[in-house]
Image (cartoon, rainbow, N blue to C red):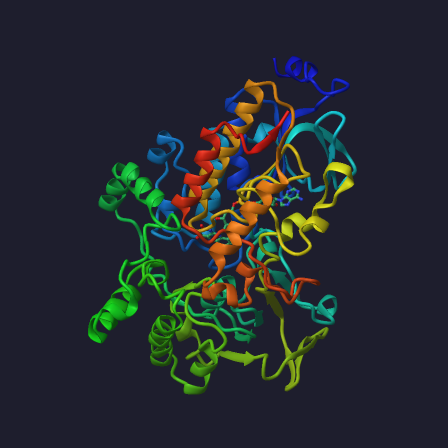
Length: 546
Ligand SMILES: Cc1cc2nc3c(=O)[nH]c(=O)nc-3n(C[C@H](O)[C@H](O)[C@H](O)COP(=O)(O)OP(=O)(O)OC[C@H]3O[C@@H](n4cnc5c(N)ncnc54)[C@H](O)[C@@H]3O)c2cc1C
């Protein structure tokens, strides 16, 4: 059925398409998109660089990798049967459990038969004569499809530090997002961790007890807050399973799709005592409440931000015995919540251990990696293992690693050289029939909730195109300008956009990424969905359809 539909296409020569849609990436986005398009009877192929499904949870196997979203708010919501079948064991599940979950999803919905693993997409070029995409894999093979859907992840392009000698180290070295599939033996080893973002924090607190000696190289400390993870008992499990509809409804209503949502009060609308008690309560609660459920103005009002920053700084001073070390762990160049808040479990207490040392590389910069270890301005440290917890070229990085060619040979990299330009974070003018899942300018937050919305919206657009025999779907230049301006306006006044971080596209380890950009949509998720819903209701009349 699908093939005859293609040969009836109205444009020029009838194209011979291998697939109706190609999806790049088999993480949560790509898996769900495959499920939805197959439901419509489409011929779909997913190309995935890894050897298995799961994306983030396939690659990030470092010790201690786990959610900071509540597990049950993170899983897919689309299948009632799946929700009842799967039981999360902890409120914040670890990576092995999440990967098991995603493998179960792949099995249950028989997804693997349409996924080609070990297949990195190197280039994708739009063919105007046939209204199709030509996708080239790293091994040189080509495939053609009408639609191209990127599901390549906001945090999937790892970056190593730009330090001389990285290749010369003779011990073991790992990037946290390229962790081996076999366990790494830390017993008695001299270990270095470079980086203290969310990943570094999880790694450090997990291995500190088993290594011989741990040296943490920190450039920018982050404001961390306790995760307070625990097992889910049988009674709670029952409540979770029977309460799913209400819980997902709540996630749909909150600002960033978490169970937590900003307190409507301003920081200075309550007494000092009330404020302190509120902060204490949030600090003692599980999850992102202290960030996402705090007073509404902590990330917009400098004075409010200073008050919560001071509260968390006091906590760090209480928890770290050596006052000098505590000062090094307290961020001085950004306020609480203006970068992603790593959630921790006895992270600060690690620095009270005799076998742990903190090196502030703003004081003694790393000069080079040597065959035996790391040389700083202060001397040379010898290591058996170096762990690079140096994160990702976020949001646009996975796009930069594919050579996307649009209409008239336009390169996406050129189009986005001053920052991404999109329509609803999904479409780009000059790149017809290409749709992005969790691309720039979409709402992040509790990401799977956004993924499900994003996928359903893209599915609706493709359904519309097929129903009306449309073979070319494109955002207009005016639509892209208007959405991009809207996203930029939403970012104005947010303290987080004044700070260098992955959320502002800043990365010292990537050439040309030392200018802050507005990479993500910072309005509320309900507002984002309302705008996209309206576009669909108006039958996509803002798009150029042919
Ligand atoms: C350590 C860690 C913890 C996180 N914890 C949370 C959390 O608690 N809550 C939350 O909401 N979010 C969290 N996230 C964000 C997480 O990335 C998203 O929640 C979600 O998994 C994104 O799914 P995705 O499918 O969009 O992208 P990904 O899971 O990143 O999948 C993208 C896939 O595309 C593939 N790919 C990329 N480029 C190519 C190419 N050129 N060719 C072929 N394949 C390609 C990759 O191999 C990857 O498998 C976390 C991220 C990390 C790194």
